Image 1: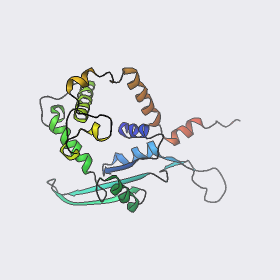
Image 2: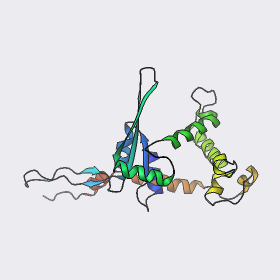
Image 3: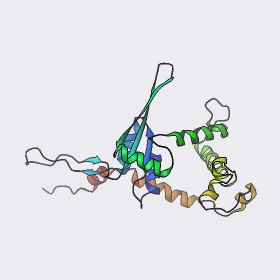
Image 4: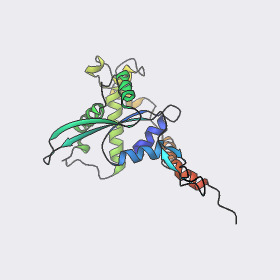
Length: 217
């Protein structure tokens, strides 16, 4: 839920982003809670009270799902995909425009997961270097993220760093330059981001019910 809230905060002044997920059960409800709009349900007979409102996805929300079928031993048998919100053809067209494949997939996320697990001992499944404190794990991931984006060249980017590829840097940074550069986020800024995430964790229906005026007798 917090990951979905972070995506919503980043894209709050833009159209909903393209979201590609696997078939993990909590994902659809988390996405609908954060991005969903209120749908007022109609009365069957045109009389009486309106039914309780529900959430509906916005018209421009595009979410694709990859479903993997495995046997009892965990061996992969089949991979299928579908559109959870939006049209499948529209989602696949946007995927091709972004250059991340031809069909609905999560390969870019799987690649990132494999890279970070291979380079972060704290995230290896069987390790003695695990983190006992959540904040220490977070600090370690932040450090890894910055170093891999600013100080390490990538073969797929023609020996440039990701920061160079998107125009944030004109050279490969050294670790010393990264440490001395005064761009690190303050605790106050992180607290502000956390407050923004918490503000979108409350669904539109919850806000509607909370703000609904009480009847006067």
